[in-house]
Length: 355
Image 1 (cartoon, rainbow, N blue to C red):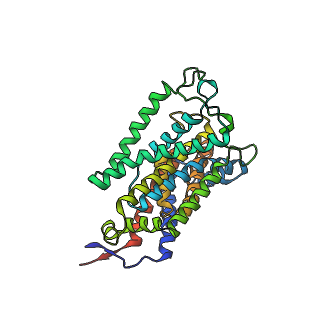
Image 2 (cartoon, helix red, strand yellow):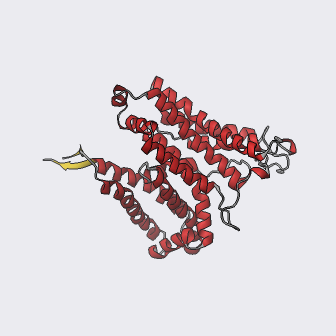
Image 3 (cartoon, rainbow, N blue to C red):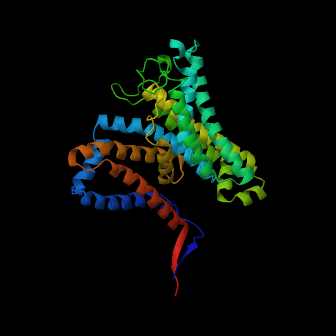
């Protein structure tokens, strides 16, 4: 008979090796699928790496894709650290994108005639507030009424996407888009500059990395960070020790939602210039995988975001060369999540075999 027995202490080495081992295990499992598709495993993985990291162009596309992934990964990290399971980053991202266009868009052909130095911070603030409000309600319902936040945040995703669809076919629709459901464009003065010339990499990467460092500093050096960690470890014990539970939950919800909202604003300002329903191929959900791969460490989110982005970008090159469907990248990402959850469980518990 097997049973799980909690470890008294998890070693640092185990915590570091757990996500690495999960990725290796995932690649081995995915290799079976590649062989099933009739493609050579070594060449398939070589093409995957080459497509994501093998040239300046590949790196530029990977870093561009990594920007929203890092931000949604940070959103999940902040929430999950406090055991607030935010599954709604996708809706919060779209809410932030819509808020950004609402403030900085070319409404009536011109938009708000304010200085870009004033309008840009207002646009980012509006995006952060929109994302934060999307999570504040579910967080308070969990704290006060015991409502499962997984259900409420997931449902809000669908509500937001339906709202976005209605707005893009209604009041926010671009009259020059020839019937295509998209919002008006952002004012050109509000778009983010290119970080590398003749590529799509924009200064949103600096935003993402800076925010990761800020979140790490909050966790490590502030009272709020201590309260978040305490709440995540044991909510009852934290309350007994004097941690203001409700205030901490509110702060976590505002910070997590704001990060996801900023992901939407930065994606609009740096890449698309307008909102469409397909501007996010599931960045909010992939952010959960990234947070778990990073072990809920803000700086680890940067590396995990670049890795996942590289897999997703490299899958296109691999598919064209060997005929393996690009869905293998989705399998790798999803299997990574399952593997890292199991690996994390094994760092906290040991398996005991009893007679």
